Length: 241
Image (cartoon, rainbow, N blue to C red; front, top):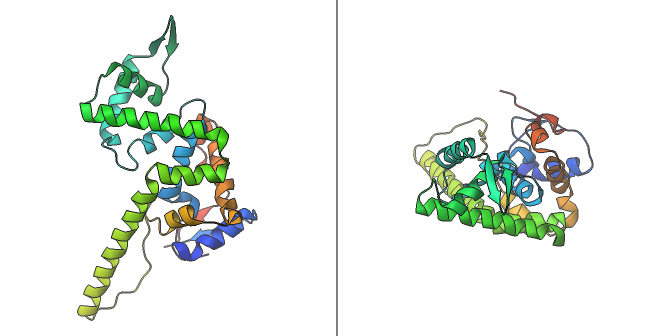
């Protein structure tokens, strides 16, 4: 298959739902887009009994919440290196994950500015709320809930509008100059096309089968195996230049 964006999105969904292997040439699989990876990260934080450093790092400032991960994550790691134990009543328990270290930092109010401390406290509280929804929602409903409540829906909707506006301005400029440009549109991790609208507005439960299958597969792996999930992805993506 070739092409980008929403032109092949529905076809990818149908093939994945029916477990038909396919190759995307010159573009990304829907399951490799930034918006889907962000949603998977929140889903992992919502259902894992043990924290997940990869998911925590990806989600901490996505969408932006005054917690730039290039600045905040190193601070949390430094705190974790120097504080491997925490007190819980009369017991001492080990701290091995970034999320646990972040929780201790919030409790002790150390290592961060006031604004970042407040933002981190709110983020950890949100994770707790999402975990509470796990036992009362089906997977499709939980995905839709997370897509909206995390702010990802609004974030990508705004981002796509800005991208579309920029593209319109570029087209107008080309028309004025009587220039014609050929070639394929390039795609990056941030090219998410219309996935956000599909996730939020999809009413046919059968259409969400492929997304449900792929997301659940990536979520149920252990924290160690999660790092290798991409290598195990059956929906191989190849680029041809």
